[in-house]
Image (cartoon, rainbow, N blue to C red; front, side):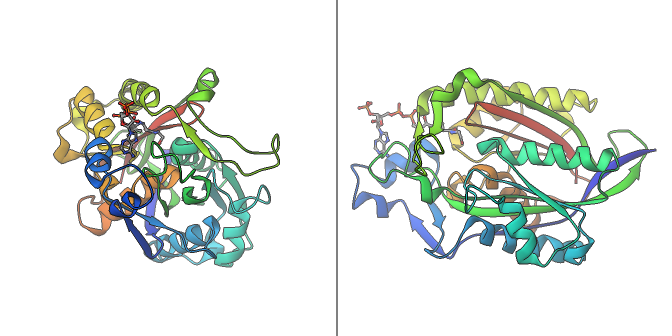
Length: 323
Ligand code: UT7
C-alpha cells in the first residue's frame, strides 16, 4: 500500500474590486485591445486597502475546509505559497493559522514566486507520504497589486490579487496511477535567470520594491520549460499527456497556455483557463483555477490532472494528480 495525499476540499477567494482593462487606459499609453490580444487578460481583482495576503488566504482556506468537512484543528500542517506575505516575518502561514483558529498545526511559507503552488503541493505531498502529517492545508495567496510599478505598462496590466486552497488528507492507495491523490512531481530552478523577473526591493534596499520583468525572455523560457516539466511529471507517474483529463496551467498569458498545450499535444478543450478573469495571480493562480473548475463542474472526482507553473528564479515545475 502507498500513502497518497488526496484532495478532500478546494476553495478560493477573490477581493471584491474588479478592475477592467479599460481602467488602465486612463493613466497609461495602453488599450483594452492590446492587453487582451497580447495576454488574454480582460479583468483582475485588486485587494482593498486594509486587505492583506493572509486575509485572502484565510478566506480560501475556510472554504476548502468547509468542502472537506474538517474543523481547522484537524489540520496538521499549513503551507502558504506566496511572494507577497503581509510582513517580512512572521510567515503568512502562521497568520492564516491564527485567523482560521488552528492551534494544532505547524505552519510555514514557500517562496517560489509563480511556481510557488507547485512547490508547496510537492512539499505537502512529501509530508504526507513520509508520515510527517496526515492532513495538510496548501494555499496559494498573493497581493501583487502591492508590488506593481503603476508607470510600467509592460507589467502593471498583467497581475492581480487572489487566493486558492486545497485540503489534502492521507489515504492508502495501491501504488498505481489509478490511485486518487498526488501521483508524481517534478521541480526545477535555475538561478542564472534571476534578472528576467524580480522585485527590486528587500533587505538589501530596506524597501518593499517593485516587480521588474523581461516579458519576452520569460515567455521564451516558459513554453519550452513548462512542456518539458509536465511531460516529466506524467512520465514519473507512468503516464503521458494523452492519458490526462485536464491540464491546469499557471495563468500568466493565454498565448503561453496555448503554445504549451500545443507542445504537449493537448487540445484547448482539456485546458482550464481563468486568466481572462483573474490576470496573473502568481502562486494563487493554480488553486484558483482548480477551485473555479470544480465549482463549474469541469473537474470531477477521479479526473487525471497535470498542473504546471514557471516564475521568477527562474523556478518551474509540474504535478500529476488524480482528483
Ligand atoms: O508569471 C510569471 C511568468 N510571467 C510571464 O509568463 C509573462 C511572460 N511574458 C508575457 O506574457 C509577454 O511577453 C507580455 C504580455 C509581457 C508582452 O507581450 P509581447 O508580445 O512579448 O510584447 P513585447 O514585450 O514584445 O512588446 C511589444 C510592444 C512594445 O513596443 P515596441 O517596442 O514594439 O514599440 C512594448 O513597448 O508592445 C509595447 N507594450 C505595450 N503596448 C501597449 C508593452 N506593454 C504594453 C501595454 N500596452 N500594456
